[in-house]
Amino acid sequence: MVETGDGAPSATELRLAFRWGVVPGREEQDPPEELSQAYLWLLKRSLPVPALMDASTLRQVQYRLSFKLDGKEAGGETTRRRRRVLNTAVEYAVEAKELPSNPLGPIKKVQRGSSARVDPRGLANASQWAQLHTAVSYIGTWERNKGRRLMAFYAVLYYAALRPSEAIALRTTDCTLPKKGWGMLTLRKSAPASGKQWTDSGVRQEQRGLKARAADEDRPVPIPPVLVQLLREHIKTFGTAKDGRLFQNERGGTVGTSYYWRVWDDARQLALPPEKRDSPLAKRPYDLRHTCITKWLNAGVPPAEVARRVGNSPEVIHRVYEGCIDGHQEALNRRIEEALSDDETSVQSKDEEGDQPEGDRGTDDL
Image (cartoon, rainbow, N blue to C red; front, top):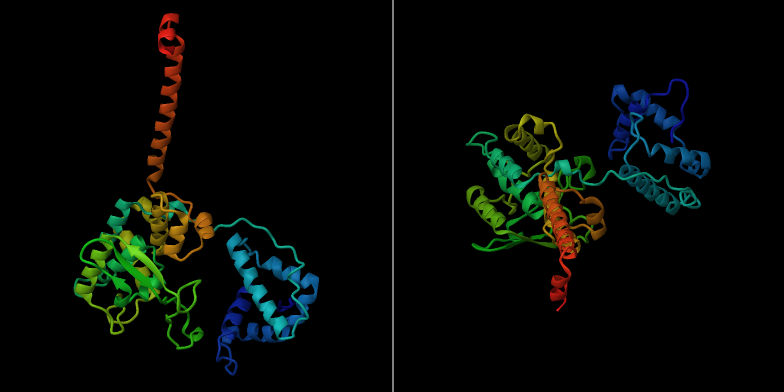
């Protein structure tokens, strides 16, 4: 949606200038000197919204949705998400009388494969989880407890399939933690990370409702005894924040994204052998949620029940969580091998029956 020509800034410069310019509150500010030329080009050479009614312009915009800034092809899920965003903007333009109708309707969608499926190489088995979880406790000094105060945080991702933003917002009033048996987490809020300039309160991690749910709708998640005990020990050792949050940083504030990412990166370096450190194995804390969901599916929990517990639709569960936990393939191969052995034994028995004398076969018939 920007004209090209002699003296046009690079795509990277235009992208940086655009990202600077769309931040609320900067309308009256001058851009940084290194972005001033690109910003001026955007102001003068951006195409007006009605240009989308031109088929060639619209097709060019849709074509560019399928590529990254470096010219490489974007993933299928990324392309579809961008098209949904574009459609939302166009619908708003129609509502604002900038366009007579939505021109995207007649345009044929570009069909691309999805890369949203979970990579099985990123899933940790029980032994790897135990090594990583133990390594977390060694991060930071004993006095600061940088790693130890996050052990229960990673555990709720691994045992209850919480999103990190849901774990950050978890409070003691959301937890039922009996001394024995299963407990319950009743999720009510989420604290996704975003820039301060995009939140109403000016706080980086603003409290919001759960993803894909009404603002006042909660989600109960049963938790196994091992997680119940971990949470009880965490509360006993570290207490809670002033507002009741279970997890807090060393100063009592909100656990930031960079905080729990750095601890996890350090734990991976400590727990994993060299050949695994550079692999996708548990590369992100979010991979613990993927591992939990896959473990439930492999255990035979119905996909509809898994979807209810984790806050996804059954369609997403079927489409995305198809991976196997590292090391699980051998167990499946053994099952197949046993089944093949049973078939061979059955065929051999029938062959032996066919070789019996006539008298024996008559006796068997009787």
